[in-house]
Length: 77
Image (spheres, rainbow, N blue to C red):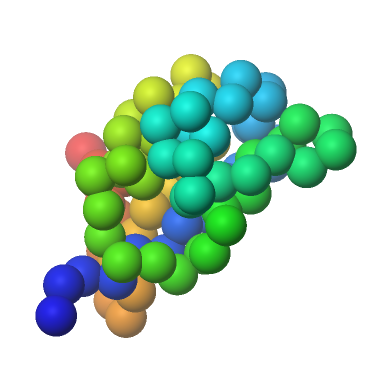
């Protein structure tokens, strides 16, 4: 069994660019205010969700491992 991720969007940072929806169409949705929301906050690890987080122009998407909260993106520096 693979890793499970917890996905959050900081809506104080989100500018509604929709890059997350473009990179992970099933992983994110925009509300009527064009703010991003994860379709399922706890999801199986997958490259599309990671690409969405990496493509966010304001780094509003955070991904952590379910269980221990270890940062997946952005990585701890």
